[in-house]
Amino acid sequence: MMGDSAVEFLRSVGEGTRVVVRHQLDDGQATDALGWFLRSDDTHCAVATRRGLETIGFDRVIAAKEVPPPPEPRKRGRSDI
Image 1 (cartoon, rainbow, N blue to C red):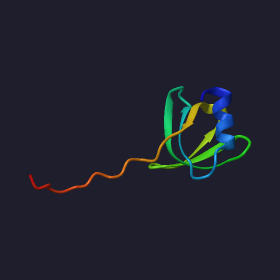
Image 2: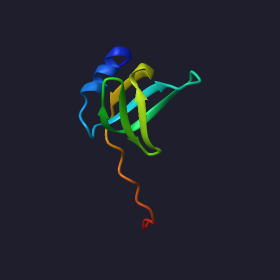
Image 3: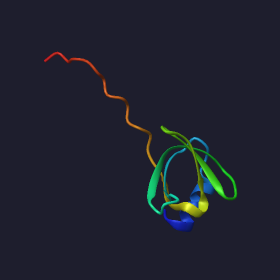
Image 4: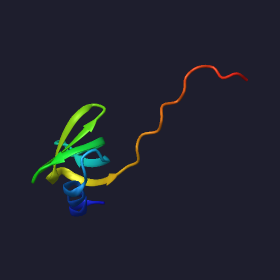
């Protein structure tokens, strides 16, 4: 979803949903916030990412969507061949 539909998605998505939000930085470049949706108000949303809590203004949102859970970690160690 892009533009206004992305913002509407973020206003209605449930807490704990895994999302990716593409948004514009102050320097004009775009970046993604991938993580667990926490909450939103009239102007911002909060996403818990690996880097920490990101608060994103709706006026900066370019696109957003729900994404599947992360894959299971790979098993480490030797396998008998």
